[in-house]
Image (cartoon, rainbow, N blue to C red; front, side, top):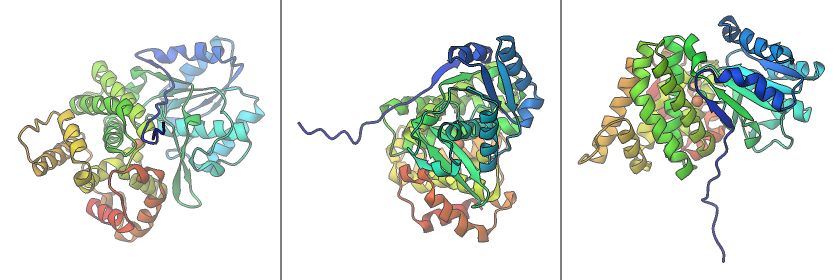
Length: 387
Ligand SMILES: [Fe+2]
């Protein structure tokens, strides 16, 4: 019997501990991997908030040595990965722990890859380029949005090409994700909004992706539902632990969905913006979202109807055009309520940047799973609409 299995989907996930206080299990997990010397990756903001000191203390109390690498910048650079990997090697570390947003976690993934192969991180751009397993890795996210802690993605900036490149492989899924809503309490309203909308984009793009399937759909729809209900009140009241937990749960579900279903044109275009102009990822996504939804809608109408329903829009009796209009309006309303109303031009993007940005976007692997095939001109028009 000749079965076509090309449409079947796999699902990869780390071991996840979700809930308040889960970060405190870090030493236990590190010890279970046989750790002696932990390499701890973070960034200056997270260090200033006190989380690095706490994790270091937990590890040291358990009898482990720690080398901290906390200089990771937003949009982590090739050079930072290489410096980190050299520190990892020279200190004879054996387990990697990262605490932070997407940047420290992606940098940690890069350090793991370089440590395992002894080659430059630039050589691993693309899909399934990794041949040796990384050291054991434990990730603790401090933002509810990027989901690098559960994903098969590592995004690294190459300043020489002004390009953010993607490494996509199940080898960059960490061994353990300790997803602890308590550590998001140091996020301000703006970061909460940017990362929360990024998670919403993950869920929507995963749901309409050509790589979607039953294993990712339920996570994507639940993430959309949770963010639609809880992000606006959370941004208005960032100290509410219940809301923080709900948005963190949504981010995790969106992460599981997009890690396995991959993404679409919003991410391809925002990776290009982030690499070319060093702009914040979540904000770029937010500014592009409704324009890409409008572009994609006719090619995934049934899927977008389910997205609209997950956003509490009663679509019964509505025409397709009406569903599209209501969905776009709800996305715009949500963005406005959380304060992400600006346009690309206000971030310093100009018309003359669009040809470069569009060329880079078409090289991004996320464009391949967009529900509508996109030409260079299509991408240019969407950038122009968001300008
Ligand atoms: Fe994202």
